[in-house]
Image (tube, rainbow, N blue to C red):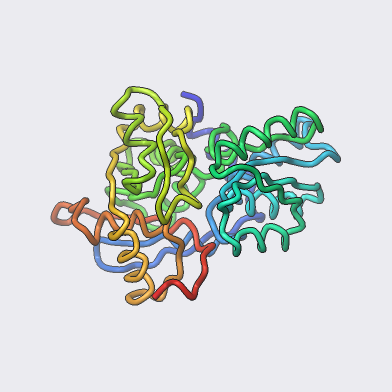
Amino acid sequence: MGVTRTDVELAAERIAGRVRRTPVLPVSANLSIKLEHHQHAGSFKPRGAFNRMLAAKELGELTGQGVVTASGGNAGMAIAYAARELGVPARVFVPQTAPAPKLAKLRGLSADVVQVGREYAEAFAAAEVDGEQTGALFVHAFDQPEIVAGQGTIGLELLEQIGAFDTVLVSVGGGGLMAGIAVALGDSARVIGVEPELCPTLNRALDAGEPVDVQVGGYAADSLGARRLGALAFEAATTYDVGSLLVSEDAIVAARNELWQEFRLVVEHGTAVAYAALTTGVYRPADGERVVLISCGANTDATTVA
């Protein structure tokens, strides 16, 4: 296995004091929401970013050249935040389609922002070349062991905060969050990945028996728009029998509105994807099944919530 429970536990020790232990909102007797959108930089991703950089620092690989990454927005903000906290420069390659609020926040975090192409894959290719040319540490948005292990610390927190539960619903893009939580939980709970019908990386990978390129689009593509599931995510999904569900664009919009109207949670469309599985009945919990939803990000334009 590329990432182990021990890796996640070491990540928790490494990033302790640098990330928030986000609260859990009890919605009903059998539904809880982990409010990871309250994390630094507005999403879960600083966990993996700090773990990647601190692990590299231990090995002498984090130098004055800083870090470089590619991101649709959230990973870039997390990496820029972690780099700023660690006192190293960050350069973030983003698609030209990245939302204005995310670009503004990236620049507010002192990142050097470079816009390339229309999709994440194009920005990724440019960031890799930049890292090779400059010597900056390349930090992947989702498919590095340290990244996956860092995201998995959410699973450890859930076990401490809630104790016993049966199912975790998590939105999937490149799959780093899903993979980390699956590794952290092991056999203690099942993880189910939920994706937009227009960004089905996990769904298509499971059908094909390996990660494959897919076309991406729709409301949640800014945060879930990876063209291909990560190799580590595929390994975790097959090892831990991660489920795969798809939800429609209309369902995502309605779920996002409901999270605001019912719970006053201002979240991005990517977060609403997981909740949409419940609101539409795409996922129907069994009687007494204890479900946890990961509210993974809130980097959005609040004026478009209602």
